[in-house]
Image (cartoon, rainbow, N blue to C red; front, top):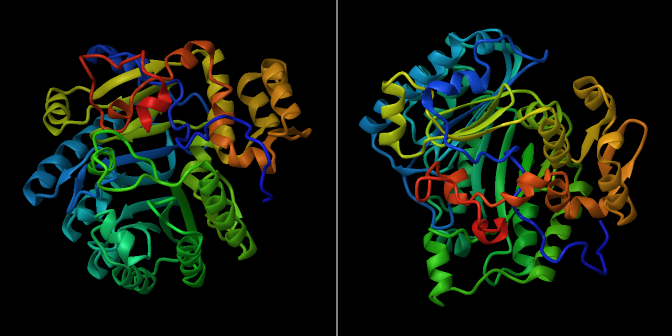
Length: 460
């Protein structure tokens, strides 16, 4: 990927489009099943996706904005009791009981905080209550520090077939700076343990543009990832969210901020080139996979526009055209479940027009939108709906159009998150302002989702 001499946008958007339409209104609890269309069979054929959030960590990394608290086995048991109850309630609905799931992604927090017993009981509950396809991808995120050999064997025995480690860096200095709970050697040992447990799909997350990080330091991280032959590598540019210790340290001058735009560009392009040269396929702004290891969960939700069942505190989902985020604080989440409610905090219902916007905005996260699939879903071609926007982006060298797809160009890949947002409707461009505190933590600010704060300010 060659360097660019000019900026397509003033600021490179680091936050991907995961939610569309943006959840913005607190629903009445009694109305949630209707908004999700739980009483109706699935609108579309094909496998569905599922996301579960585990809001516990053994240690809180200083850069993490997501919903979490320190691990306590008794609190985890109480949480899993409600989580299983929420899943069981969905399973009784015509929408979910009539669905076959092609993926289950368990994120957090740190799911690997669970004990081996808790893992076994939770996975058995999910597979007992929901219909999973024989080729379903069941993926669990975790830290090398607490994903022990025993837990890896247990999860593999109970149906998990994909592991994603939050390595973040193989550099001892930066592991300490980010307060990551493991040192690099622990990450290496967890990889050995995962392979020994029978996993043939092991991925890692890496963070770049750390304070004072040099190109050679970043090159060493990428080289190690390639040498270990990880099946999947996800690259994140460091973001400094509000409400985190890292933000406070930089704000008080105790730590230098990340490098500037040009340094970020240099690091990103170098890593992308190295991974592609090593045989990895880049299929999103962040994600690189060896052949046959592309994340099926992402394909179902972003490319195929399938429903996403989200369960757990601060989980997000998309059912029946309703985009929602669950309540994040444990007390609020558990109270709602105990009351027999679906614990949605905020949501937005998409009409046909907004679903078409979402198909473009979410689809381009994975680089392309299939024109035949779009026509199958909406009985029209994306060029007939978004011709002016697509034409402008083609002229700027960010999109290309073929008879089969609308696709990001090589240059468009770097600016992919910005390009996705070009397809937001005018309404959601105006309220693209949902702060990360709401979307990441499932907490309202002042009783409602704020709509007057620009996204860039809210999420950086």
